[in-house]
Length: 545
Image (cartoon, rainbow, N blue to C red):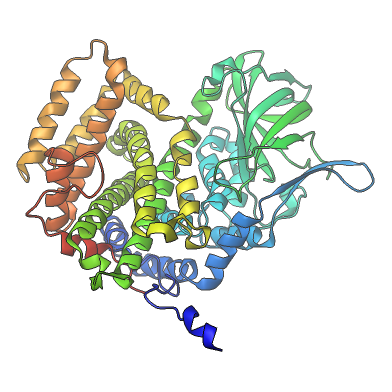
């Protein structure tokens, strides 16, 4: 009995559980209210709060931990030697995916304020377990590509936008809802999809083909259908590959192996072999990139949203820990240096959330001006927000000290996940070069971005000066490729600054402009200048269960 006194637990924070992930995120709530019409705002708030309470519950958090700890397993054959090419997931994975589908994370295209409400939900649900967001993202993003073929869209879009999750492999026509994956890249080309060698041979039935080739990355391999790029007689073309054919037979979809990834462990990413695989053409021959580009744009926005969600959860965990942990007589959150670190992290998180939701609102608007804005703003935001995610996650883990290096804290999972969105859907250089292409070929995109930035003109002298510097960069495009990252970073920062100056509390916009635009900031977090209201910034970021 005497020894038990050494096990008295003191000065340990309670778990961050039993709270509403949505309503506890003041920046996200403000963005949703700003971009949602009054006719549906109450409905959207309630819907997101229901999802937020689920995401913050101990039970759903346990599902996320279980799905991560028990990664998918490839089964190429059944016990009798028949080829089946299936992936087994932990039951927690299916519970998470069912919740995500049920919450409308694939239904943005069919509901009022669909993209804003779905973006906010995606940001919330990422904080539970990011892996299950991959099939949700692919399914959501497939819709605009399928609309290149009205007949295919009429058949498939109602299934993809359904709120019913059906995990069984059977013909999609017999299912109440369906999921989609994507297989574009090959080992010899990577992001250079025009180097693809997968061959598509036409069949007698118009619009149908057989595919032969190997895909280096196939996302969500247990989905009901896939968008695939292959070389048809007329050039690189987009195809729909169903997992199960209409007669119930399995399509030829040979899973060679699952990728052993740094993070994103709950989600299966596969190599797949096509060998006489039946496919249906989407769009015209030779226009595969043009057909699939809207899907890529949608998944790139999801990369930004996913990184914003990871940053928010990292900051929430750090602030929560420091509010309940004492050192040298007072709470960590009240220590001036720790407060500087937390405020700095909170600024990065709020800026990411604010910009990502603005992009979602542009999708809902759909006007020519907003489409032009998205053409430039999406790759810039994807580049910058995803780049900031890893340093935020690592610094947040350090706020917990040694506890943040222990798996039970959840921070190591965030750290491992944090580089992913910067790599997927085109790594940093791909995004930077895409921005250059938009600048050179689509002048309306720059005009739309500058119009958005200009709405804050005169509100903060540091922002005005940063915009002037951006103009200087844009005026000299000689040798611009070598400094494309610098240009894209500046564009993303002034977009964030313009939005925060107009919409965030003064203490947030003041600190952002001083540090990110005014140059009064060190090379690491926790180097904000003096004279800022750091207490208010940290309190705004605090998740209150």
